[in-house]
Amino acid sequence: MRRDPPTGVVYPDVEGTLRERTVEALRDAELGGNLRTAAAGWTAGRDLMREEYGLDEMRARAREIRRGNIRRLPELLDRLEDRVREHGGTVVHAADGLAACRYVVDLARARGAGLVAKSKSMATEEIKLNEALAEAGIEVVETDLGEWILQLAGQHPSHIIAPAVHLNRDQVADLFARESGGPVPRDREALVAHARRRLREKFAAAEIGVSGVNLAVAETGTICVVENEGNARLVTALPRIHVAVMGMERVVADWDEAAHILQVLPMAAIGQDAANYVNLITGPRRPGEADGPEEFHLVIVDGGRGALRGSEFEEALSCIRCGACLYSCPMWRGVGGQAYGSPYSGPIGAVITPLLEGARPSGPPRLEARSAEMPFLSSLCGACHEACPVGIPLHDLLVRARARVSTPEQRRIRHAFRLWSRLWRHPAAYRLSVRAARLGLRLGGRRGWLRRGLPGPLGAWTDQRDLPTRWPPRT
Image (cartoon, rainbow, N blue to C red; front, side, top):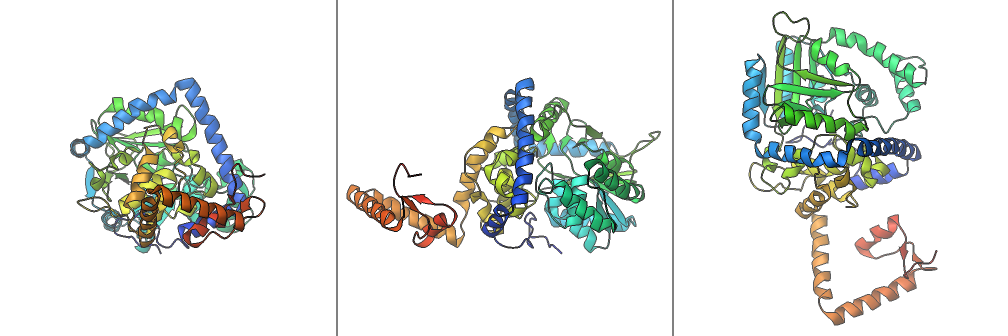
């Protein structure tokens, strides 16, 4: 069973180091094929959105909206809470994942709920709500197709929008066959029909439905849940209690802002001009209404976010969780999200995971935790910034995060670079070191390439790649 760390982001039972997991992922040819197929589909869709709707031009307005939201966050959250309460809902502020999970578990126990149906939610992945409910003896079922697949596989999401993108149709069919105890057809339509049959009874029996929140509109107290399957609509309407879990930064001021973000989100996420379903929920069911929950609870999670406001990392809070930076990232396309060891992967995950985990009430975050190595899983090529629909300078944030890391290994590396810098400030020392390095490379290399054998920490370079001993290198 996974246990919550202080702020809850990284999965502590993920096996191996980040380097070991990435090396293993790179050796998985089937995984690589699945990721390349997914990334190619996203690229084609995004190019279409750029041409037909001017997506790149729309992101300036989206960035302005999100930066304004973060600057006014306390004011907007107060207004949101007032409106939700006016409509008969309950608002709870949770300092961290432990507090949020405790509230939901206590609510389920108080209402005698034995079954919880969930729609897709990265916030509940972050706080590890499923594990907390299971530990309390409460059955929890993911109803999003991708999330249900991962629940059966015992894995965490590989992608923010497409959680099971690292698995192909045959792998999913094998999981379904194992779960049902019998053979399952392998075509897509049959697999979806199988999932629908297995999950339908859960929708009807669940006493509590749990969802995430894509946006919360402070002006009216409305939460927006965007999806493509319709399961979130059932989860939020059929059970008598609806619990919505949101990171505190997901609030916007009014419907003008919400409309723009809701238009940009599917364009960046799935390469389409609209999502299949946009659920707008304002409190519990009112007298005379035919459907909706009897109770509505909004759990607003800090989890380290408040400490990032006003810091050099503040813009990371502008993220709308579209996943575009993942598909655009050559690192993520090579290893997938499972290698990161966090529910948030790719460039945005490499930024926010160590920041949230190392957050403290005052002062800059301490990047000394298990996730401190994540910012180094990047080529700093800037593709993530280009893809981001709200213009987050992720490559800059990754560099800043790297500078904050204070693990023993990084301290040794910085010390070595300082010595190198001092050495190369002197022309004679610079020329001598270059000549020595050139001689060493030529003696150690064969046919113009050094394939193994750099000394000390430099050996990690030739463990993964060949180094030319002449320029231009011989082919």
